[in-house]
Length: 547
Ligand SMILES: [Zn+2]
Image (cartoon, rainbow, N blue to C red; front, side):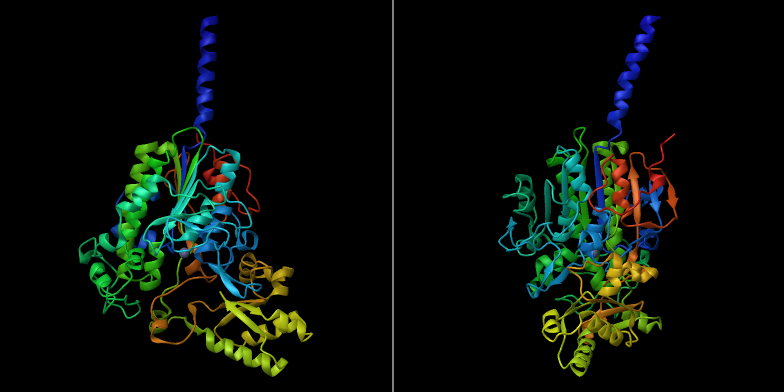
């Protein structure tokens, strides 16, 4: 009897201990699809396999009402918010770029003159130091230094911001060399496996033509449309895209590479190589792979969300995801990893298309409007008090205002009242309103406040009406292609899918979820301290104990 009790005790000890170890996934894989609208999960579903997006939809959890909770909805703030679990008001990434008064110039979200590019002579100077708080990946490294964080993308900001400050390797594509590079912020030389990977692919020699993946009758979107950008070396925005011929006609090979679905293939190859070469997920310390597909955004800007190019882009991306998921399952088993897939923002339909369809929308030509504002300033104050505009932030000339002994807040209010008279402008908030919190009484004001940083934002921020895009000048090219950045649902409603260890299967959640909730959920899936200034809330149905 004693022997049996001892055996039971030993077995429970062994299995109890095993259960402890099993709590942590071997690896977390975070996938961002740049510019993916929520409805692409359904609108392009007829082109998907069972192993890509559908694998997550059928066997994972689908957060169907996930929204960005700030403006502006651009790439750098998007990636920063996903990985810090808070908004630009706290992480400081208020745009892909912003104006720095002391320098009299705009800087990018990842500019840092203290560091140099490693792997190219392109002279890029990049680091994550503009981030004012920690990422979930930083928090993992703090808790467990043996955990590895690797972050990969085509765009620098989309690799640098997710990987955080303590990344073991953040790599992005360099337009000059056509190679994946890093920064002296992380290391002084590329790892040998990255060098080998770079040596295998040359965008100039290896870029293939882009043809439709599936029979033409499969596609729902029309090919020839007047709303698409016609690329250099082409006479119409139609298939096929003979990239080698376009390069011969003078187009940039690396630019064409980044708009080609082949870039998604190369990035997937790079990710699978990283899993293997960095020994990710091979010990009890959870690793983290951040992967951001930039090409859907680059093509999305040129062709718009209702183009055949985008439809084919997603048909092909689905196959890349299928390949990646298969590799993860083979390597770690379904219960060895946790994966999430989301987007850094979505996109507005091409406004010219909306105009032609008699839908609300159009263009706001910034140069002309700013000239009106300058004239208004001169009439009222006898001086041009406008210093700069970027991301619909107006930066006033504070030195001039000071030297004229004017009150900044009064000047800002005067400018706001001028802007409010323009029919394309929906909302204008001044720094007083943004700082005092009075703006949070309405929904749009709250989104503006969540995106406002007192040092980096302007004295006024304004929102255009739905369907409107700001462009510099009215010219034929301004009416082709599209963009994002607004507070409206076409830009803020994005997919969020979870899959893997402990994630409920086939569950759809309809409650509103904010983009900042992703990392707030990972905190509990990984038993971490909440990082820095995180404001997101955990998604509770993902954390319920399994029966
Ligand atoms: Zn983006």
